[in-house]
Length: 388
Image 1 (spheres, helix red, strand yellow):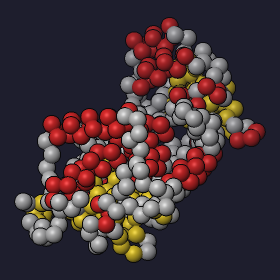
Image 2: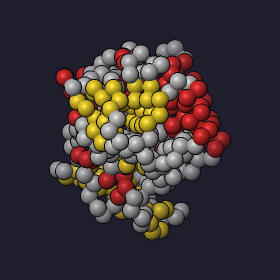
Image 3: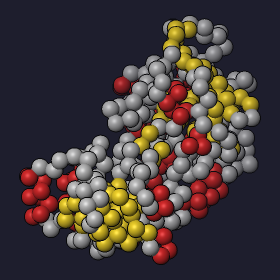
């Protein structure tokens, strides 16, 4: 069987990721060792059956693992001494934590690498996450790690991943202190938010400047809202402005002079009672307790404002860019919709780095799904080879 391999030569500094490309180089490699697990290829029917098994396991009573917390797993993680981990997860946010939990409960040996600082560190609380609504981001992570400690096959390290090399079934991951190996890689690195070059923007980020009204809209309902439209997403002007009316009737849209606003759109905004300002934004006025007071424009206008919603440009962390996984037109990692696998076999991705629909709870759900599919694939491979 011919296998594709890749190598990432450039070290990836994950510290630039608040949570957590280059052209891909591939060559053919048929060097499968005699005792190596065969690289099984599953059809769509196989994956549908696997999904059904996962769904059944979720709802059937008594399906929880009988492994006691003090026991050492004896499954796939013990079948090949030089393969230290079944899965290495990169990124310790909601997606990575949820994936590690799922794989730990599946008795897979997991290494979760988290270099920090976290992407939502500026936010005071996480919202719209059932049972954790209003939890500070650092506390959310503390609870997640505490729960992972129940599972002896899961290891968490505060360490930066510098590079990844190898092929599906045998990846070499270079850390700050040594190299480890794994059968699969799961990327949960989030995205890097580019701060806009406007005075006051950095200071107010996470305090009075937010991205998601579902995460922060309730706390600022009926206040004076501003929407700073990204030049890259002019189509969001009407969409966001109109649906934001569910939280406030006092809304001003700022285009920053980056694009022309048609008469049709002007009419829609005016009909909804939404104010439109097209002059460039020069300064965000910071008041007491690091809160927004007003938005100053290049034409001399000052617009009183309590909060700003903005969608600044985003980019992938350097590690993801160096791997050369395929990205879509918006810069998000392309994944198989069923398996969560990237364009590089054996490397998976889950969470914000794959979608513009970004929230803690959706990242966690994506982590669970990816982990479940990885577990099914690993277990089926080991079973087909007679290793378990």
